[in-house]
Length: 248
Image (tube, rainbow, N blue to C red):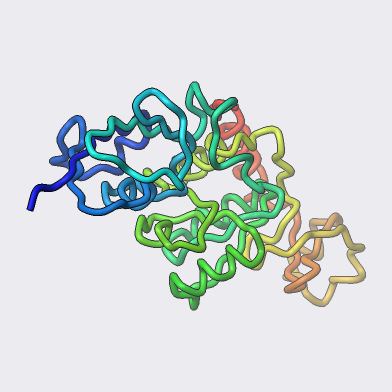
């Protein structure tokens, strides 16, 4: 039985997702009439990473049915064609994020910057995908398999492993540097912080803190208390560094 063939070029950051031994172009053999979305994911690229598809120099979406001898170019978000030919649209950044179990340190850093990030170590991939779909949140993950779930619409695969690099990836991918509101959220539970009087939280403070500090903030959700201790200056310097090094 003769197989049909199509040729795929993954552009820009999508090249990161291809197998190490992938040919250029990527040669895809198939039978029947597969949707181009299935072919792209078989190549190793989750649909959430794709923003523009071009077949034989014509722009198409995920519903396109692959044909024998098609020549396909697949582009990531923020490509030169995204403004006019995006199939994904604008991500719902203001609805917040949900992160997988491996990203706890990055989650705390994003919350420190003021971003709404759900995180629960008890969630498996199916539950995480369900929650993201139900609440229209963006998944942040190191799992390509998770992003290939059919119900996942928004998601990003983190290329880096160091926490600071991961934070900068997210800020650059979603162009969020101007949306920073540091020290707005509890880094432990994601709840919002509000300023409280010293008397309101006096019984929750260590003895030395009671003596030396007068301004306090408390999490509306878990009641954890924050103040500008010795760690505050280090965090403020880190935030300045992130702002200086982020592209957008």
